[in-house]
Amino acid sequence: MNRFSLAASRGIARVTEAALGPYQTAVIRIGFSATWLLFLLREFPHRHELYGPDGPWSWGLAEQLIGTNKAFTTLMWSDGGAWFEIVYLLAVLASALLMLGWRSRTMSVLFMVGVLSLQNRSVFMGDGGDNVLHLMSVYLVFTRCAQVWSLDARRAARARAAHARGERVTDRTGPALWGVLGLVLAGATLAGRMESDWLIPALLWTVWVTQGLWWLTGRRAQAGEPRIMLDVVANVVHNGALLVIMAEACLIYATAGWYKIQGSRWQDGTAVYYPLHLEYFSPWPGLADLLSASGTMVMLVTYGTVLVQVAFPFTLFNRRVKNVLLAVMITEHAVIAVVLGLPFFSLAMIAADAVFLPTAFLRRMGGRAARARDRLLRRGGPGQVPEQQVHERPEATHVGFGT
Image (tube, rainbow, N blue to C red; front, side, top):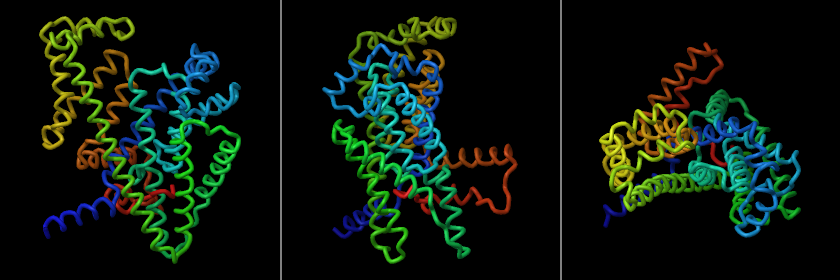
């Protein structure tokens, strides 16, 4: 009983004292925001046909569907072309700033709003990766995804260095953003624009109120216990969201694998052949012909795909096997991006896979990227905070609800 109590105490302390997986959540943040940003930029000339007034999915059809499913989208607040342009450009801006990790808590909310607004406006636009992005945009709001590899982490490190020198640091940008977004949220609520499903409006208000409490407790020196409590809640919510993201990735692969097993083409080992010869999925016909020339190779890839997808959730209990299958799946998605012409689907799945990457590997890659950046930009003045502080001590860079 004592051993059980000790183990339970250690488990509770681990979940409440720190936001786990700082490097993994940073990769998820960068991966999904970069995927959405690249997609929006690539489709910028076609934005009106995809999500705007010139699309085949007209305003009337979208209004009827949303009236039934109560999906959240700000694009249905107005049918004007100017409003569409504002929402689209804000989605681009939020994606870029979230990728950089600037005011990540606020940008994660705006990123979610942008993803839901565009995707729910035209639900038939996408290639499968949009479903993953749709879910992950909501989960990211609950994570402390800017502990490392972000402008927020660098700002937090500089603030600690300033406090150590006895200097006072005042943040005006955060409260200003909080006030502006509060006015927008209140105006939309009073105007009846938040009549969709209660979940997203409730989430927006909850995050806004929590950010205010975080800033208020940070302003008062005597508010130590409330601030600690908020930090504990933020850690628990982050760790819960991280667990959900991992479970979601496993569920995607498990369901995909078991559904494939039931298909006759997957059973006889020929399923991979057919998408290689569909015009829609053949940006490189010559390459597709080369890959499908060998029947044995097609059979091995077909059976290997099913085996990897079904087995992956069970390999999480063995680190070495998990890492091998993870490398195989990432390679497979990279091949799909090139051969089948589905780059954004592949990027979304690779970003989801990143939650399982080993911390040591991510830290090595982050260190190499930082050194390459420093050599490229030739930076490193005396006032610069060493990057090692950001990469080696993620537990000290919690930016929490206040960013």
